[in-house]
Picture 1 (spheres, rainbow, N blue to C red):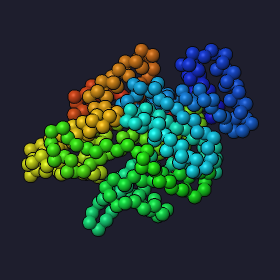
Picture 2: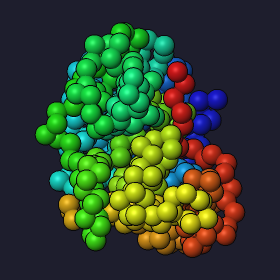
Picture 3: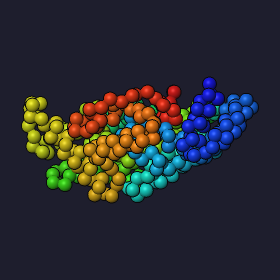
Picture 4: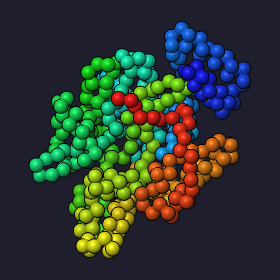
Length: 355
């Protein structure tokens, strides 16, 4: 099975890299020999780099795939110790953030070879705020409660605010997981204000600049990279319409409606819609004022249309998960809402890590 997955990847990868049929055939033969000797094979950096880019291109849930070829790939496959892995992730935060000019980046650690030879990152994303269930109610991000409890059981303690950055938790080679505090000086956070509604600042909202997904497994040619954190930049609605607005997250719409003086007594006043729009206006405005890369959902949808056109020109089959591609604000104003997409998973790709 692994040799077939490897061959399929090499054929496509080498063709797209404009390598000859002979080069592909020789490489496949070398891989099959590696598999016979070791039971696994190792990617060259060129294969790793292009395979990671292909995985982004094939990511059904991502609306930002137009920029797949710009992905910066950092190879950290030689690292074995938890502290080394944590330090590499700190470097990723700085490189990916780039003082606000976000650079799409992936750091790839060694692949899983056995139940005692792997790297695993416990965090959903490298940057994430803690969530606490208190006697006075929820503090912080409710989505983080289980992971926050795990960190506290391991000995971590936050400051008890709505925006405590969680530590990074790393497991290496079947040993006891370890946690590492993220240095505050490498994390860029954006205070949320509104261009015209002065009272927005009273909400004391902020969000981190860089969304770095870290719980997914990167699969390239049958090889499983169980630790491969990656980032692009935010689409504004991810923060304004989900992280801040969802009732199971920060649930800010009632407070936003209050400072706007909206009538919340009945749904037909559309107070939620009005508050949601202004919350998203605030997020986009704040990020741009802070010089941090972000994209609105209308621009993102237009970029995705261009991606679709480029893939058609290359005669590549385009896949997508419609439920994720449509933005959570005004989806019917985008072309995506009116289309159907094939949701089959094509390799290379990102998959949930098996716990």
